[in-house]
Image 1 (cartoon, rainbow, N blue to C red):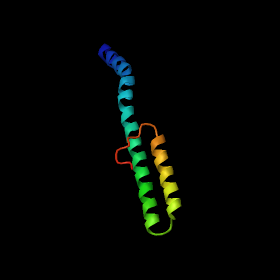
Image 2 (image 1 turned 90 degrees about the vertical axis):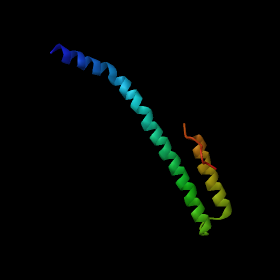
Image 3 (image 1 turned 30 degrees about the vertical axis):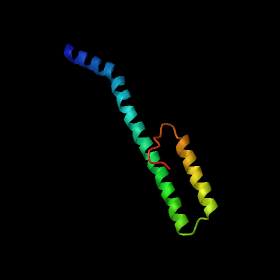
Image 4 (image 1 turned 60 degrees about the horizontal axis):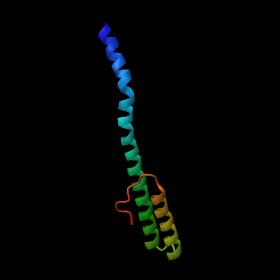
Length: 82
């Protein structure tokens, strides 16, 4: 019976450590999702420009805005960002 109490206390003592180890993984997943969203937005802008639905100046302005959001995003890796 006392061993169950010790086990329960050990789990309670190690729970914050386990939580902190799992948290960065979720943050990394969010960063990857954000970067994928930015890439998708850039690809959509390119498609709109190629289809003639977006003028050159509007395309450049929209692309610049997406790039600014990439740079402003906290912790987003810029690999592959143009």
